[in-house]
Picture 1 (tube, chains in turn yellow, cyan):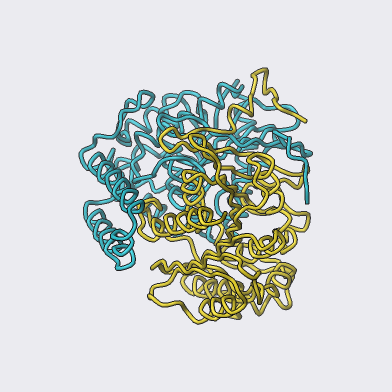
Picture 2 (cartoon, chains in turn yellow, green):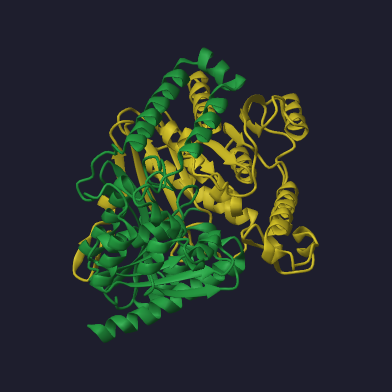
Length: 308
Length: 315
């Protein structure tokens, strides 16, 4: 174990540098690499310091371009949850962001679940939370739903969920093709869908990310569970420009309610994008982000208050 | 999987890494330090991303890759989030390379110096490249700058590198339209907590907009220049100190076309003749293809290897 190190004779104190407290909100943020050397994930813990911890949340993000698109929103949701008393952990999957790379570079459902479990273990160790609310954004919803089921059907937030991995890659493939049409350099390339090429090639480029065929085959075959736990508390967040649930989420809500889950719905009027928006407006000032942050944290808070 | 949790630094073959929060004025900026497992060459590299909607690892982990690769050359690196981006605190209001943005960079440069760096090299893409250039003119610790597709035309406007007033009105209009959506109004009426939170946000935003409009940014003791300096002054400072500036453009990018079109950026063109400029046939702006990401990592890596030799020869 190493708790400090030196660089050119100067003392470096990781403990002092790895957390800070926002005195205005009473939230402390802590960061750490977790796991075995060479397979570590970067994780962040947001926890209240000016009040007691009333619960915990694990936020499972998405992959590829989605990881960056949702990143700041997830940070803001975590900060707000901590302000309301929930110790909240976020993390980068292996081969994503600042975490270590997987040997093959190809993310799998199992590697994502393993990384989320590592983050949940840290939450348990640091905040004593053994049954956190699982929150998954986009493709991360599959991971969150899986871990919620494994944890005795823990409360679950499905944040603009990808209902099946196949949908995710189809959406990415279409967005990639559109982006390719717009980019001069891509005009020379084949117009065949990148998804189609994945059936024959070891990896393809989608929206400036390398997608391995093994990831495509593995994640593409996954979907949200057919039936949740009886009485399981679920919040489904839909980002859409209309006021009504779209067909896929509507079917999921009906099916899960029929199976005995208590499903709430949060509608956020926003367009779900596939590429990082080329605009400067801070995420903090966007109405959809405000609605997301407040909507998710209010639901988690209310759900915790109602639980004996 | 239950993994060992009590590890504060990482041990790998060529590097170890440490995430840090650095106090910067009223904010805390996040970054990841990568240190060579072997002998340090005494120079630190500060990597800056492109601005809003980005994070320390940069698109598809490009900075993560670069930092780990150049550890083999003995470089210590810090890939940082500006305030209001990634995992840093605060709100990144606009593109003005002044005030808190300078404080972010100052904190990072100071931290690297305090932890043993004899000199610092700054690397940035797009807006981050502009921040890197201005930092190189301001901080004596910075010996070289590697800029990927910097929007140098913003320097021609001196301190006013924020959005145009027209864009501001557009943005206010968009914000108003979003706030008055039925779902938001319903929530405002029904939810007291949401109401007070949104009012707090709106107040903060108005205060920031007012500060930006009137130039009354919060004073930053470490960056007395509240606005970006004029090109001649900025580049004069770099030249006097012998700071090496390397730039990579894509041939078709507007950032490059601006620079090569006669009369487009007259003051900058006159002052920046000594820039070492490379032009790539493929676009590097936005790192929007794997090819451009590979090119940038390879290009910066090779340039850092050369810069190390130049440093050794001059010292």
